[in-house]
Length: 419
Image (cartoon, rainbow, N blue to C red):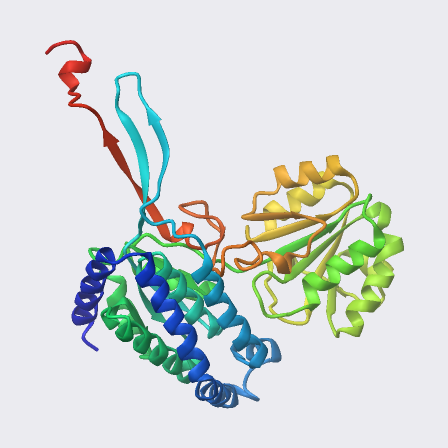
């Protein structure tokens, strides 16, 4: 693969995007929706072939991350439509102020430029990321995992067709199907052209990217998400939230992997919760107090408190206070999403302030930490770092700004009174 040619095509597309406007970008998204619907059967057949290839070789949660069924296909199309309907933010002027000197200073929203995204498993990410990049005028290079190579090829064909029909260079969105790590390493060397790299997948992938590039990186770390059931929790609500957070879908980064329960409510709620988890075939790995209350619980190791299982296992710990819960979360959590269940408004406020995660929730399942649910249309990933974006990253997170400064002939000498 000629990486230099690929980069050159991306730079040409970047210039073409800069000359376009919101109507052109929305036209591409409309063509993308039409193309997805037209090629639905072809895409789903490609996905079935991908899933068949790994069947029997991987666990159910991993396979679930690969699957595109009719409902997920519909959700993918809905995401594109939702992104298309978002108000355009490029070129918008904001934070305008007038200084005593007469300088009028503001910011203008602009694209980041060229984005490289390296990701694993979920094929819907290909469309979500491409649609968000198109909406924000960014060029994007997408390199998905080998496990959904056929699906991504079919999705890439639709993207290429949509761009060409809209009169934009195909290089505006490139879906790579080569699985060579040498290709990835070569791309990661192009810090002169690529403005941001987004790795989304295992810790091994993230470490590989960080070790091989100087390009600014938006980290999407694993999701060791917590639900803390406070002493003042409504028991029915606590059961509903905790069970949804863990069992609604096992293999996602916003699934709860750890459960903390205040000692004052543990004896009452743990047996019921454990029974429900058992019905979902979820193994409990607990501390001493949990193992005493729940006979089927397995003693937890130190490593369990920080583990992202992505499967039918959850770590459970009894804590003595809200402070103990927040300390535990900040020590062992991944900074993704954590939730408190309580009817005590003061306790909730302390939790929301003290837990240092990208998304912190009150009486809400962690499964709702999602770009679509947050009104972003979709997300390109969830940033667990602090720069330059946090949490689900939508169109605002794929833009930056430049300063716009105006005056009526002001000079520094004039401001200093030396003219």
